[in-house]
Length: 165
Image 1 (cartoon, rainbow, N blue to C red):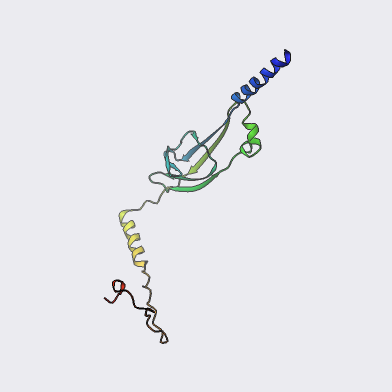
Image 2: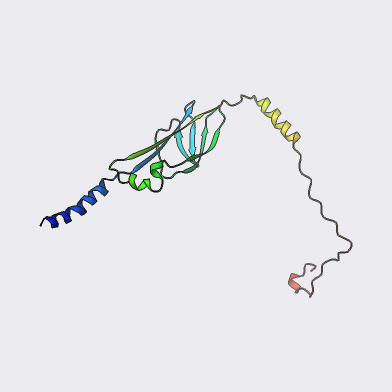
């Protein structure tokens, strides 16, 4: 009788442990100095700095872009690698703990002021760039060699494909 009760409790205990197992919550926040920059991650607009916690699923290399009027844009490829508990092996144990593990990252950027240029300065720079630019010379047609003959088909072409018609 005792053994039958234990055999019923074991699957129930295993199911309770598996159902109580936690997971990993991955979050990233983007901040900037000064705040208010528009943030794009991998081409998706995610808001303005500070962004708060943005949840993500996959680690890897991300293209992060920040833009703010009056400042130089920041475009950077950022590698977000997994922590130790997310690597093969320890990740199995991390999945069994009965609480949520949080992997929080913060990306901080300092934006540089853009150069203040008047319209005249911009036009002067554009004119200088145009004047300094040169178009490449068109490729020369190779001269025919003296020992070459004009190509002729080995047999007559059908009338519809004859280029001289």
